[in-house]
Structures are given as structure tokens and as C-alpha cells.
Length: 109
Image (tube, rainbow, N blue to C red; front, side, top):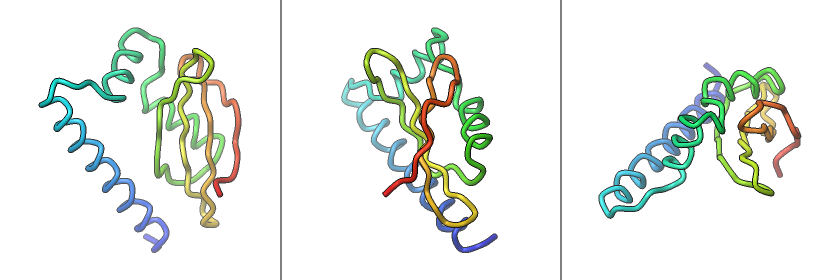
């Protein structure tokens, strides 16, 4: 495993750990976060599951997924997936959460 992939993997694990700990803390206080909205969207078929979104993102931009967000833009759910390419660049893939259509691919700053 190259250092870039190792660092990306560690970053993804740390991000997931932070999200999980925040989610548990919020749940304990009766709050519902983005993860609840995402789960509801998948359950009601308003959004595709992450496994499918990851396949779509990797087809658009081969590499390691380092971050994913679910946002609402103009009333529509959009997955924003950051992918670390083999050349070390991070590219953002915007995907329509319901249809899986790739809306945009751009380099991250």
C-alpha cells in the first residue's frame, strides 16, 4: 500500500470515527443528524445506498474515496464524493442521490 493510500485510508477511518462519535452523542441528546436524514432518504427510495454511490463515483473517477456528504441543493439530494486519484489529486464527484446521475466532476482546491 502506498503512503498516499495509507494516509487516505487513515483519514477516512478518522472521519468515520468522528461522525460516529458525534452521532452517538447527538442521539443521546435526542438530536437527529445528517445520518438520520440519509438513512430515511435511502429507506424511502429518495436516495441510492452508499455502496451504489461509491460504484458510480469510482467509475467516474478511479481512486480511493476519502469523504462523502449528502446535501440538499434546490430541493434535490446530492451526494458529494471526494476521491483521491492515483496521481494524488482529490476530485469531487457530485451525484444525484435519487437517480445516480453524475452531475459534475471537479478538482478540489
